[in-house]
Structures are given as structure tokens and as C-alpha cells.
Image 1 (cartoon, rainbow, N blue to C red):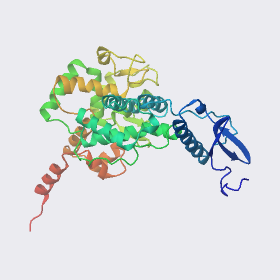
Image 2 (image 1 turned 180 degrees about the vertical axis):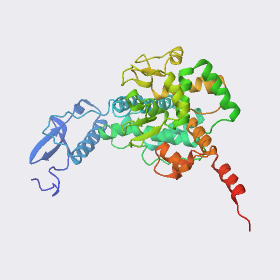
Image 3 (image 1 turned 45 degrees about the horizontal axis):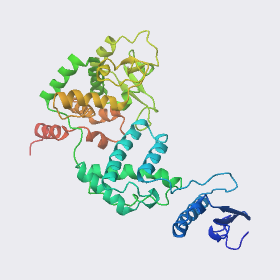
Length: 389
């Protein structure tokens, strides 16, 4: 083995040779010599060529440290071919197969806005390998001003940008990820998913009953069971037992990966009985779609019924926004139905321990987050049950 190999490594340090017949990076692996030029000798400007070869040397060293065996016929990817926009598009395309559809759409939405900021800053032709923290800060500051980002949203942009660029870093297309270590803005804690007033809840119920009845039953189910919208859209008829009055959530559809059984109360039983599940295939989704894909708003009204195709979580949010936020002008999220149900049960005398089991939480502290009326209940109990001195 070559003298400047470390005891643990099987390779020598890659070095640049500026031979008259052409430059190349050379090193030994298990005693055998390897040379790589990757077409960089076509670069006439010697200063630029030297710069590109140094990047290639660092990439080769990085791959060797990660266990790359150069005897395997792998062609090193040239990094100088991608500007910022092209690099981001490449990273998004590679990220697509690594995450869920919803997560990919979130990344894509954020990065599309980042690309607009890059264009407005006129740095779109900057090579992706030359992206540095100073550029990233300028891009994010531009986005913060242009889109009026809250500190929380600004931090989300950092997270998404870093996650997407990590693909290029892991494949050695970029040597460093300049978003890593970028300082986030102070997180502002706000209580999220607050239920609307009792009057507004009645307005929502009336609108859904009259114009979106299938979706209304979907919302009623969230209220009564506390099942998350994403989980509920994955529930199939095979998980439903109307005789035992329970929904059996399998571990592969729950957020925490733990199977749980959710009771069906009398109110929900009436809805499910009217849906007439008899003679339907057990693999149908309870709240599904008759079409594999549907785009038109009018189609959403006809969905959320026992059917063979799963509805996207984003579709439920879109329909809720159109009906509740846009049409009724009521600022309440779909997920807030879970808190609304928790409040109603607590006010009716259901214990936190029972709610914990219903929601599948490991701690009552987690369950308490969903009970916005807890202070009111505690105050009432103190006033009514305080003993005499």
C-alpha cells in the first residue's frame, strides 16, 4: 500500500497532475492507480480549469471517504453544468421519490417562491456549486419581504431549502450545503387550530349539511372520534365493525405507528348506518373517491363516500378552505374540529384519561393541548367543589 495511505483507508489522497498531454486527478485504491479528468481539459482558461479540477478532487475524496470503490464503473457527474435554478429543479426531481406526495408539494411550493426571488436578485446564473450562505441569506430575506413571511414561515423556508439541497450534497453535486447552520428567527408561539364560536360552528354545520353532505359526515367523524383527517382518509370498510361499535386503526395509518381502537358512539352510528356499507367491497375507503384523480371543484362535492380510491389530505383542506374560510369567512381550520370535539366531551364530563385513550396519546399532557376549555372546566370545578375552612 502507498506510504501516504492512512492505516484505516484503502486509498491515497487524490492529487492534481498537470501533465502536458492533459491534466487529471490521480490516486491509488488498493494499490491500483486511478485517473479522472471528466472532460475538464476542454476548458481553455487555465485558472478556471484549475478551479474545476480542485472541485473534482474534493468530490473524489468525499466519495472515497463514504466508501466508494473506483473499480466500480461509476462516471463522476460534472457539477459545473447547473445554475441555481437548474440545480434546484434537479434536487426537487431527485427528492420526489424520497418523500410523500404532500411533502413534495410543500417543498415544491416553497422552492418555486425561492426561485422567483433568485430571478429577482439576478443571481440565477450563479453556479449551484458556488452558492454560499451570503446568497442564501439574501434569497431568504427577499422572500421574507416579498411574501411577508412570519418568523415561523421564514424558518420553514430554511428547513425546506436545506432538505432539498441535501440531495445534491449527498450525491456530491455540491460540496457543502450552505443552508446548514443558517440562523433561524425567533419562534413565535401561537395557539393553533382554535375552534370557532358556537354560533359560527352552527353556521358551518348548516352550510355543510345543505351543500356538502358527504363531507359533513367526514367532519362529524373527526369531531366524534378525534381521528386525524389524514388517518381518516386511509380508513377502509374492513376496519369498521358496526356490531362491536369500533373502528380499528392499523399501525400503518396512524401518525405514531401504534394501532388503536376507536369507539363509535350513537351519533356516529346513525350516520354510518345510513351510508349503507352492506355488500360493498371491504377494501373500499369509507371516505373515498369514485375517481382516481379529480381536479374540478364540483367533483369534490360528490366525493367523500365509500369508494375505491383514496382522497388526498390536501383536497380536504382545500374544500374546507373554500367553504368555511372563503365562502363563510370563518377563520377555523379543519384540524380544529378535533379540538372542538375534545372541548365538547370535556364539558360533557368525559375525563382527560378517556380522551387520551381515544386520541391514542401516550400522555395526558399531550391530550391537554387539544382542550382549550380546560381552564374553564378547572375554574368551575374549584368554585363548585372547594371545601369550607
